[in-house]
Length: 240
Ligand SMILES: Nc1ncnc2c1ncn2[C@@H]1O[C@H](COP(=O)(O)OP(=O)(O)OP(=O)(O)O)[C@@H](O)[C@H]1O
Image (spheres, rainbow, N blue to C red):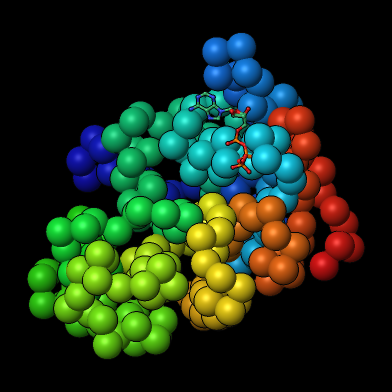
């Protein structure tokens, strides 16, 4: 095993123990506090909506949970392991192997076809070109966009692009899908369809979903809602 590989040996999460848990997260950008003691946890296969007003710290929480941004204080544990104890290389390897990402805009590589975009995470984790292309095509069909597989992102609609992005995020069967306003740039009809497909595909692959949104219509697809306000997260128990 190379020094940058992620070793998933620690105890596996069970239905009772969280797969991903953050405790006491603080993060300040310059003099702007983004997180001020945020706690969060999600179990395997669960979909949790992270809601709250603009600037309340939702995206920062997602970035800390995914190991993209290090918190100033507090810990994030994935599968029992403290992300802060991993090297940068180990964290990158973990993200590639176990996490998938969908953002609001611009995450597809413009020079690649949709099929090549979806195949990319597989290629980066060592899958051969033909096998990766075949899996990518299957995933594009599952998201109902196989007809645009040879198009480039600039040649397709926003809704099609988000479906391709969801296919790319799930093609490696991640254990956690991080989705930051995945339908924020879509009209309501396209947004609904993308959410239906995203949630169904995540359920099929048993991925947990951290879903950042400010729309209650989108949050309605979750099992549970957490509201972030002034850098702190509050569980809305029973607010299904
Ligand atoms: N890279 C950064 N540099 C400086 N300030 C930042 C950075 N990222 C976030 N912030 C600030 O931290 C605070 C929280 O931002 P964050 O993006 O986490 O909120 P949010 O709830 O996701 O907002 P929105 O709903 O508008 O996307 C805001 O005041 C924001 O301006």
